[in-house]
Amino acid sequence: MDSTGDMLMDTTDESRTHENELDNDKSQRLFSNPTEEKPTQKILTVEDSEDRYHKMIDEVQDYAILLMDKDGYIQNWNKGAQNIKGYREEEIIGKNFRVFYLKEDQESKLPEKLIEQATRTGKANHEGWRVRKDGTTFWGNIVITALHDKEHNIIGFSKVTRDLTERKIADDQLRYYAQSIESQNQQLEQFAYIASHDLQEPLRKIRVFASILEDNIDNITVVKNNIDKINIAATRMSALITDILKYSQLSQLDMHFQETDLNETLNSVKNDFDLIMEQKGVVIENSALPVIKGIPMQLHQLFANLISNAIKFSTVEPSIKIDYEIIDGDAIHQYPDLPLKNSYHKISFKDNGIGFEQQFADQAFKLFHRLHEKTSGTGIGLALCKKVVENHNGYISVYSKPGEGTNFTIFFPV
Image (cartoon, rainbow, N blue to C red; front, side, top):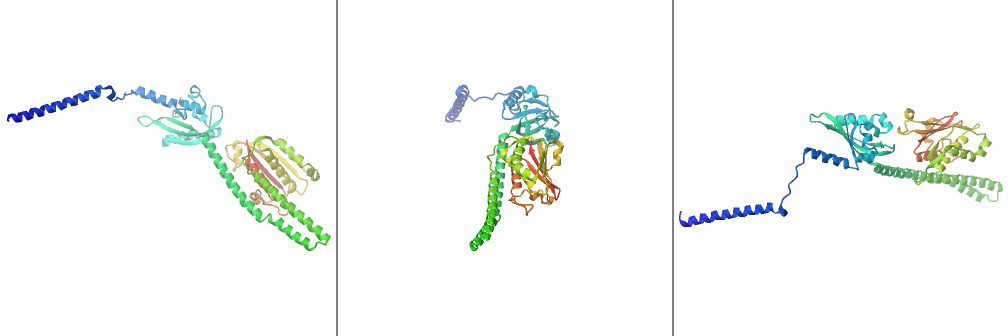
């Protein structure tokens, strides 16, 4: 190769050498310059990682997080569990998680069923009322997850609980409003029927009797007779309007509950009826009644309507027996319409009136429905009773037999 070629090769080699030197120098500057140095991750030991994990769990305060053994006995406890459930760690470690459940849930083996489900499927979810250390309750959402070893054997369970009481209250309130709106819509339909039927009838009579008056204005006997009929029709129309207003007032949501002694309520009703009770020889026997959380005016109206009903539908000296007892536990199963989670005040009003066929019991509480067409009344009294009981989260039923009287039974939750 000539000298020119040697020069080209030397120049190329020098150029490559120079580029490599520049690259090396750039690399050295890149890693030697503190402002350009890339951070390296610290590799955590297993011990450090576990310690950090446990601290993270312990510091969570919005969730109750705990570990349980295979039988549901608690092995650890975080701050969130203390905030939600009220127990300090040293108070709860070693106890079974059954302590968080209502008595009826314990009796129905709900905690064991959740453990069984988590064992079978790997996870169990549930929402319901839970019990704090101080006995108060909260609405909890829980997730129980099965924990396994390397051989996939269950070694215990994790349990995560959220306190959703505020959401539960809000949902219940919305449901209550929806039911109230639905109830009021039904009442509007009933009122429309009243306006087109019940109120029209006395109004028609007034117009007919007024027309007869106009044609017989000089006949004193006819005038007097028709004026009496007009007054009777107007009185019935007034009674209907008054009872409609009473019923509509029971649907208002701004009701004030307070401790109410039902013995005082009964005595007040007796005072109201003292004259008619004396005239008809009414006898009222009663057990000692409870004090309940209620609306005094409405409870007075309830007792008054039931006693008035018993007096009205008696052909002999009216006898009314009022009995009281508390029912709970197994006794509640005798009443399939009652929720099983509550205890109840059971109050019965039994009379010796004319009674009616039991097949018509469902119609007894319908608005403007009269079981005895020949009797006076607007057909609102028992509908008012049902509304009052419902406003107190209670239940009312009736049993009757012609010639043997009627027994109204009221249940108020304790």
